Image 1 (cartoon, one colour):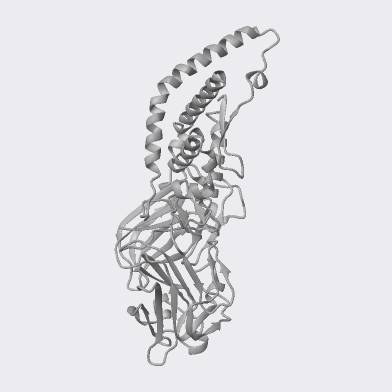
Image 2: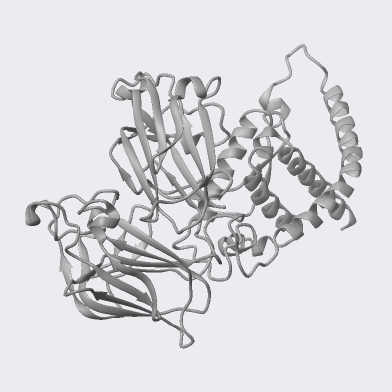
Length: 500
């Protein structure tokens, strides 16, 4: 029994050393969240707690999702585990190719394994007239002896690392914007006027209309709704005089109301849609919007419009009551209600990529699919960029002459723009690859970049970021970003908006 314990201890020491070596590699030093996940999984294994390695516990302990974490609607653990498997595979195909041990996360599981690599004789057989076998055994013995000395030096450091890791996964009741992903908690999504549920491009489920009183469900025949990837989302609405009584747990929420003027427009009025629908919105008796005109706020009819409100809480009886009342005979209209866990005094950060699906970046930030845009085209590129530890983030871009109207609340914001310079994919179906990319970028008319030459700015790598602080929204509560070509086309990969 003593011999078995010694063998197990020696194996565990070798595992710990392999983990330490992997974590010190550039593959993981540049991906702190993947290193964090790998450390957590391995330390649970070392502590004999592999039975506790579950998707739910990982979501709470590593990604700080909170007790309401729903792995069916939030895929962060599965996404990050897949990325970790890929990163380990890349490491052992490169710097770790000669390691005797390899850390493996089997597909469909989260418990790590430390697998023996192929024996030296299998990888590189000894030549017929090569070194005698006894010399190989002697070399192996010296290697094990050296490993013992290395482990002896390493154990105090691993002990300190375990203490640090234990402190790195505290149970937190509330999440702030510096933590991973969106805040955890109850989410409510209602598609007004709809008799069926709907899944949007971000994979979020919107329920059929409920908890309403009054008004009429209206379905529009409008073919196109601008500034959205989900036009069907805005083709239904509740109109008239109506209110909602939505049950909520006590807490701080961010309320997002979605609109689109689909009834009034040039075909009906001969001019614009402004002035035909004006109404007031209240939350638990407090005015949110007075004399609100959807078309005037969006800038046109048949255009998706989102209004954001922070610091929203249910009344003492546990209900959030939203009242929609028309002014001077007008009919109020609403496309959807979205209620999300929020922060005190500011909005949740906005991160979006010019792509069709959501994405978790290497730092475990959640990026929504493209939204709020007008104009331009999306293109995906098969050749990875250089100069980034997360090339997948730059796989797509919007290019052309386009704008984004990002809804926010009053305040100051930091905007970071993410660009990728394409140096030729050899794909003739992508005309913009060979085109020039010199353009201007404006925020509500203020120049952020003038004659920005993407190829030159991104040299010598392929990616470039530009950050701007102190930006304020326009009177409609939008950060209106305009990308205007000077030579060729404008282009953008991602946009991050963070409240200051």
